[in-house]
Image (cartoon, rainbow over all chains, first blue to last red; front, side, top):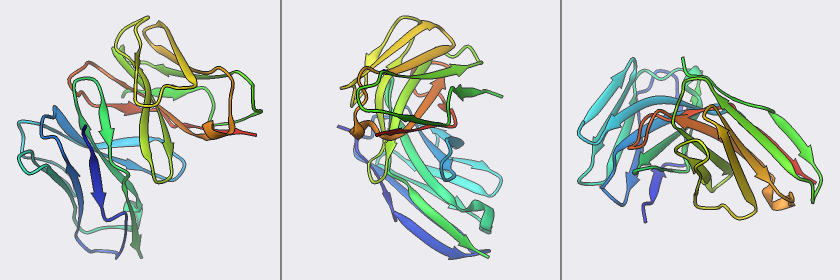
Amino acid sequence: KQEVTQIPAALSVPEGENLVLNCSFTDSAIYNLQWFRQDPGKGLTSLLLIQSSQREQTSGRLNASLDKSSGRSTLYIAASQPGDSATYLCAVAGTYKYIFGTGTRLKVLA
Amino acid sequence: DVKVTQSSRYLVKRTGEKVFLECVQDMDHENMFWYRQDPGLGLRLIYFSYDVKMKEKGDIPEGYSVSREKKERFSLILESASTNQTSMYLCASSLRTGGATQYFGPGTRLLVL
């Protein structure tokens, strides 16, 4: 059964730092991996989707990598800003279903 | 842009009431999903549907049912609400199977008293 883990559960950094969020999964047979952002009390916003055949995806200050063989993905945020404060979730896709991690709660201090 | 809407942002219901949560997507997506989100447990899949009138159980279907009479609308039904169903409910849709991008609605926070 697929399990998705995100470490750390919470992270607090000063503004301007580059940071890395981690996601690991136990079954490498995935279609893709998706990173989401969730603001308090809101729904999820898709940030990046990496297909199983890809190694990384970039969008602005965000870069996500995927290593299927080791069951790991990282989300790199460059030059963090207070507006990046949110919970970040990763999810791995099977045929029909996504399995979600429990998220990393990020706070960027001004 | 894909838009997924949910009928209510906040709901307060009493134990034993029948509760309907509605979700509508405007991009002709085949797949629709209902999740609940609880602190420390993350998102858990309740039900999903890959076509009109089709439904599949997710990981925690007990106490819930769903209806998909039209492609754009997916309803979650709590037959007899209980306090342990107090949660944030999130609807999502995706274009197809095989792990297409999921788009989420804003969520419904349900409190069952």
